[in-house]
Each structure stands twice: as C-alpha cells, then as structure tokens.
Length: 214
Image (cartoon, rainbow, N blue to C red; front, side, top):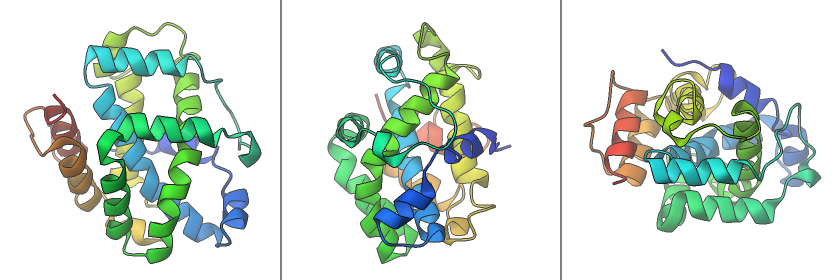
C-alpha cells in the first residue's frame, strides 16, 4: 500500500508560489510539473542506493546538506549544486529521462518546465533525505535495503508519487499512477528486470530499477 506521508512532507517544502511566479504559470501547473519531475529524481536515487557502494556515496553526499523544514525560500536553493546532483543521479540518461517524463505528462508547458525544475528540486530532496536520516550523520549503508533506512524513505516517496501522489493534484498526474509512470521509469532507468519486484506497481518499478542497474 502506497503511503503519501513522506511525499506530503516533501511537497510542503517546495516553494510552489515562488516557482509559479518565476516561471509565469499558475500553481496548479507548477504543482503538476513538480510531481512529474520528482519520480525521475527519486527513482534515480533508488538506483544509486541499490548497492552498498552507491548507498554509501549517497549517504556521504547527504552529510553535506543541511536538513530542512517548512517551505524553503527559492533563493536559498543552490541550483548549481542541484545540476550536479541531477547529472550524478541520472547519468547519461538525464536528457532521455527528462524528455520521456515530459512526453508522458501530455502537457507541453510541463515538459518545458521539467529540465528547469530538476536542478531546483534535487538539493531540496537531498535536504529532505538528510533530515530523515538524522542529518546524514552515520546511518550505515546497509540500511539502504531496509524499511527504516534510506531505501525505506525513497520507497515511501516513490509509493506516494506513483501510487497515491495524485489525490490532491487534480492534474494529468491522475493518469500517472503505478502503471504508466512506473513502467516508464523502470524501463528508462533500469531496463525492466523484475527479479526483485514484489506485489506489482511500486514493486515492479523498483524491480526494474534495481534489477537493471547492475
């Protein structure tokens, strides 16, 4: 069962009003774009955290990010750092994933927003994860595959985004539950192996991500 609690906590930190003003769109559009962009980032992080070395690297990176709470000031978000995070997380599939997410949204405005939003959202997600793991202090890399560690938080976020994150969006995201968007990301980031999947939906997505990342 997908839980939206982690997703709701993350979305509360996104400065939707400031983003809407910056990109000259309404808040409903920027909200839909944020929800379309986040699975690419979180899914990519899940790939990186799917083995001990990758989880270790991600947890070390989290130590450099100050945990955040409440809605962040857009000007306080380091987009230069964000661009580096996106490149590291998505690797040579960054452009492919971004374009595919845009096409899957069925909205040209959202598609144009995605490459601009990813560098803004990436450090915000890192700060959120740092807070969830005690400031990135000393959680062992092995927790990446356990329900309470890094993998658990990433799994909860993906569960909300792919399984239940559209309840309040009222947008094209209602068509992007575990089937469409999950299948898209699984194929792009992982390659579709389901040897580690469990229970369909999010399980299929993670099975594709983790099985194809080795």
